Amino acid sequence: MLTNEGDVIKKYDLIIVGAGVIGLSIARNLPRDLSIAVIDRNEPGRRASYAAGGMLGAQNEFYEDNALYRLSMAGRAMMPEVISQLEAETGHQIHLKQHGLIKYLSCMEDQPLFERQFHFLSQTDSNIRQLNTKELTQLHPGITGTSGIYIPDDGQIDAARYTRALKATLSHVDFYHDEVLNIRKSDDYTVSIHQQQLQSAKLLIAAGAWSQDLLRMLNIHLPVTGMRGEVCYMYHPTLHLRPSLFGTNGCYIVPKANHHYLIGATSQPDRENYVSDSGIAWLLEESQKMLPSLAAGEIIRTYSGVRPFTRNHQLYLDECSEGLYVATGHYRNGILLSAITGHYMAQLILGRREPLLDHFRIKELTT
Ligand SMILES: Cc1cc2nc3c(=O)[nH]c(=O)nc-3n(C[C@H](O)[C@H](O)[C@H](O)COP(=O)(O)OP(=O)(O)OC[C@H]3O[C@@H](n4cnc5c(N)ncnc54)[C@H](O)[C@@H]3O)c2cc1C
Image (cartoon, rainbow, N blue to C red; front, top):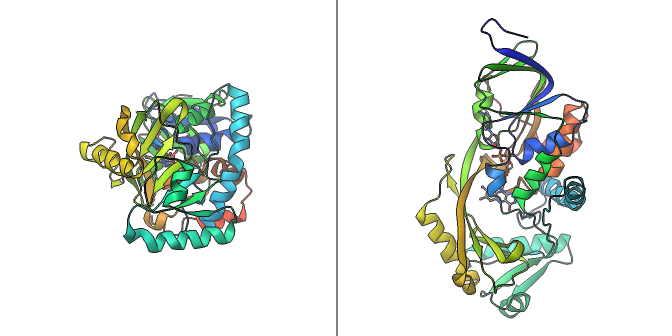
C-alpha cells in the first residue's frame, strides 16, 4: 500500500523496536505464524547486549529477597535449557560455563554490605560459602584478598554469541536496519522509518537505554537513561581462572574461552558509546589487585556498552496502554533476565499476564 507521501505501508501483527537481547528473546518466544517486524538502527545485538560480561549473577546481584531476585533466580534456572536448544538449532557455541562466581571484598568500607549479602545468601542456599585468604587461594592460586563469598551456581555465557544465536532463529521475522523516526497511534500504531511506514495493532518498545526517546513520540515519559560501561578483553595463555571474580567495587574478571578474560566494568551516567583511557586504567588497576598475574596478559580490545538504567533499578515489563508493550530497565542483568523476560513478555503480548509481572508495571508513567 502507498501513502499520500509515497511511503510504502507494510502491516504486521507486532512491531518490535530494538534488536538487543531483550527484543530478540521476546520475538523468539512468540508463535512463528505471527507476522513480526523488528527495527534496529544498529546491527542486531551490537549495543549493550554485545558488551555484556555474560554473567548469570542471580545471587551475586542481591542482598535481600524481592521480586527482582525471584525473577532472576527463575531466569537463571531457565538458561541451561535455552542455551542447549539454541546451540542445537543454530550450531552456534554459546559457551555456558558453570564454574561459579566469587564475590570479592574490594575494600573494608564495603564489609557491612558484603556481610549482609553473605547472611542473606547463606540463609537461602546452603552451598554458599564465605572464603578467607587461604580459601581464596585454594579456589585459584593467584587470587589475593581477605574475604570472598563463593556462589557456585552463578554461571556465565558468551553474551555476543548468545545474541547472534537468538537472531539466527528468527528467519521468519522481517528485520529493518533503520532508525525509528516517528510513531503515531490511531486505530493501529504507525511506525515511520526512512521511506517506509509499518503498521500494527501491537507495538513493543525494547530499545534499552533509548526506550524513553521512542515512548516520547507517543507523549509518554518513562525515566529510563543510560549507564555506560567500559570493558577490556584480554588474552593470558598461562592463566587458568575458572570461576568469575566480582569485586564489591564493581570490577570483575570473567574467564572466557581459550584463555581469554573479560575485565569489566566502569559505570558512568552517559548514553554515548566510547572508551576512555581513565576507564581502562581503572579496570586494569582494580583487576590486578584481585589477580596480580593478570598484569602479564595482552589486551586484545576495549569497548563499551550502555546499560538501560532506571531509578531504584526498577525493571519495566508491562503493557502500558492498549497494545503498547515495554520491556526495559534490565540494567546490569539483561543477559541473566533475557530468557524469562522473553517468556513472560511473549505471554503478555498473547493476552496472558504472569502474576510476578505485577511488580514490574509502569506506575510513574506521565503523558
Ligand atoms: C559493560 C556491560 C557489562 C554487562 N554485563 C552483564 C552481565 O554480565 N550479565 C548480564 O546479565 N547483563 C550484563 N549487562 C547488561 C546487559 O547487557 C543489558 O541489560 C542488556 O543487554 C539490555 O538489552 P536491551 O535489548 O534492553 O538493550 P540493547 O542491547 O542496548 O538493545 C537496544 C537496541 O535498541 C536499538 N534502538 C534504540 N533506539 C532506536 C531507534 N530510535 N530506532 C531503532 N533502533 C533503536 C539500539 O540500536 C539497540 O540495538 C552488561 C552491560 C554492559 C554495558
